[in-house]
Length: 176
Image (cartoon, rainbow, N blue to C red):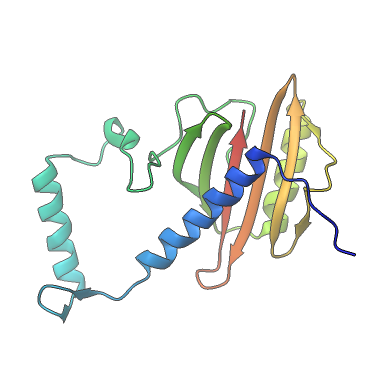
């Protein structure tokens, strides 16, 4: 008999965000062929393209424009309201964030393994006064999963997956 999983809207959003991150990664791993000339771009032509794009947009990569949005509607950088009691993952860089009516999702890419990240969060969240939630939807394995915490009505969910191709871990922190 199959067990039906009860998945909340927030969990569905986290899964959707993870799927979007993987789609973006897959699309960005395409070939380096310039469709106009059908020639493969070299590193120097890629750099020229970036210089041209920067001149055209008149934007220099600064802290000021870290709130720019990509084609998926995700803002770059950490959101301004990122809670101080939620630790940022070690050995990771933020890839974007998006806020919805269900909460804010912040995505990271880390060089750490899933177990290292989960152990870090379990320790730090407990130190910061969060209680780990025991929900059947929160499962974790060496391939990934989800875990959640709550404190004073604030719910935090962390979803992690490991990308064998890049040897990096994808991490999505959702807070409400």
